[in-house]
Image 1 (cartoon, rainbow, N blue to C red):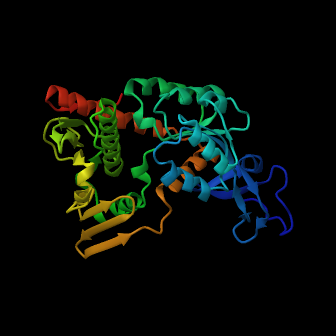
Image 2 (cartoon, rainbow, N blue to C red):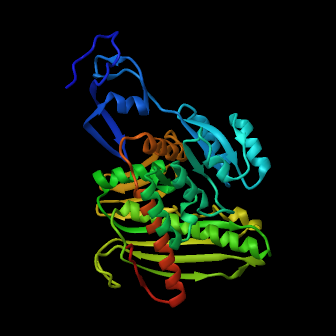
Image 3 (tube, helix red, strand yellow):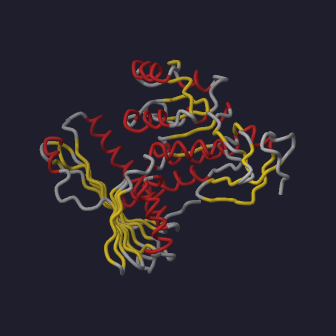
Length: 399
């Protein structure tokens, strides 16, 4: 243990102290950290005599560049960056629509620049928040690897699985911190569900996940392909959520798709059966997840969207059952009866994810599992599409 300095004494050169570093949902109570390491990551305040650690450990402020703003800028990222202004400082912004970039730049006292390379090459940018890659694909991530910039990517699930192999190799070789956005994992109801599985509900056995969306009225082929791509993105996130909640790897998937004309417009519906049995046979005793994503209600029928809508996520476990509406509603039943939990007071998902990214960048431990998770989610949906094409169950191979 370190010797205790006087209350007015600051940490001396080379002094060590015990601290708790919370990283990736784990706590290490015995990690000894050198002052030089911590000073590089954090601003250190006066020594706290009671807990034998610095009295105020202030998070390092990351200088970030925004690449793309995406559909969730106003509802998720802008409020999150405002709330986390002690952790993030926006230095530069680029977007497909220059006016949006200029407006966001003014909002944060940053500079609107032309193109992602102009941001990546800046010396005053330490990390990239890639919030949309609709027009440039994975190129900003490759550039970040070249310039040693940490990456938060909201678009990792929009990358072709064939590109993920190369992307993973480049990220591993560069040594940068990388986080793929998997928002359902960070929802307060999901985090609480994981606690209940470990303490009250027991192991998952059956999962039912359904998402029902509206379809914008359009006869434009590009618009139709866009909403199909959005539906597949939701299906990818649902598959990842099931894998995360179950905690084991699925072995096979069977899927079906229908694209009828509804209400005078195109629609999209796809279902999938995800088998977690150890055996890849059709049967087995492992968990089974039923997923479905539907865009079949035209915009003019929007009032029907919430009518008698079941819980988005239902999970039957060894000792109980839970009904979840993300991000913050959880109702569960066990032998003691019904338990209703509203987690609206928890930090919003956007803040949760960016806080996790900040921790990944400033932590003394490098985390690389996010890209693996994104790759496995994409692999599941690619296999689902193969199942649709070949009309058969497809074995999953994550190698």
